[in-house]
Length: 245
Image (cartoon, rainbow, N blue to C red):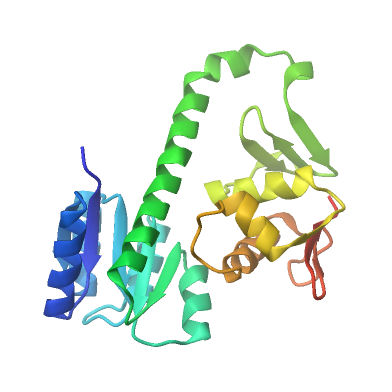
């Protein structure tokens, strides 16, 4: 079954062009022309991906994205904007968008990003299904066989794909979990943003290293005592990040 993509764009000709090109690639496409219509369509369809313009009537794309993430909508969201503004990019990622494109963009670039996001979602879904199918094995495994790392009050259990802080489970997004385990595997090492992006997001990821900064910020808010003065994930000036545990 083909993936369903929701295109949210209020400019009719661009909406039609996007829908046409996505359908040519074999995707099922639904469209919406306003923020409120986007929310209704997303809740009804539960699409596999959303292309979301920022400038929309009734409710802008930023509010649409924030609302969907508050409602635990997990599918990737690629935001579109006519403004080539770094602040817009950061804001988009911080509210839960997975990628960002500035108009005008080529259809080839758009399709590459769509495919990359859908491929990453499929890999995560397959991994989660595999883990769920092995629940009985994990539950019966003796504690000595549990693959866990502890850093003070922070524990990463890779067998169960769980993270706890002060013995309380932490709700981490899949990419946050992958980033944290990657840091743990390289404890004490200075890691550049480019290296992290390649190893955690994949060599074919098209986004830039700002993605790493945003996810590090999210992780700090969850695992640091004081996220403004981090002691676990520290910034190496001119280099990248180092995980101290």
